[in-house]
Length: 249
Image (tube, rainbow, N blue to C red; front, side):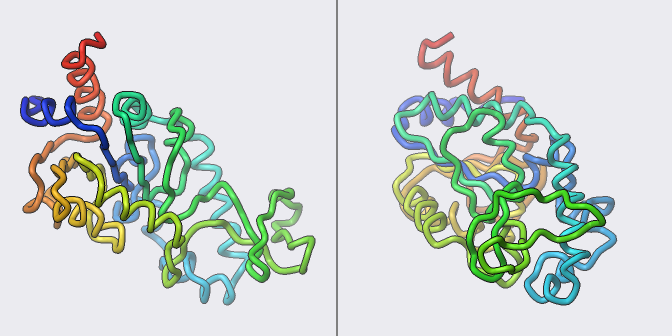
């Protein structure tokens, strides 16, 4: 795999680098993506498991499903792509990591500041009063925990279909896309909005846009650099080249 010299030169001079990660990054840690034919969602209707209507129709089924997903995620480990992004945080004066993933593997890999556009599956809150819930979630007989304040059902702190993204997270992500010198789109299909708009915002604002994805996506025609490799392969190589160029190796 060849990393373009112009990209390494741009990164060496960059003051502000931003990166958006999608399900492809987590897939390299064994967490199946939404579109995988044998993935976690393949046998289920997402609207029944990841929507308010689905939760209200059958809260037990939705809760059990997310408990299963937590088990999968708890057994997963960060991959070299995650660790490379954590390294990038140290390489540039300003670095923003934005993710569509809910598994917190970026934080496990050492990333300190992560903007979670779609929430996360680790935390929970009350469906009724919205207060965070830190109590026991593995109850006997598959019971759903209840809010100690109002008695409402507890739900995972992920963004479901039909829900708005967290305002502060989206605002900060859009600001980073506007201000950065280089923007990475990594392991994302570039089809889920408003996240898919971030690299286009960066492009319009004058940033170099880099896509790291073995697949052709809706974003590919608009990027400045296309690296057709997985993040676990491409990102460590990019970090190594930047370190070498900066005299850190």
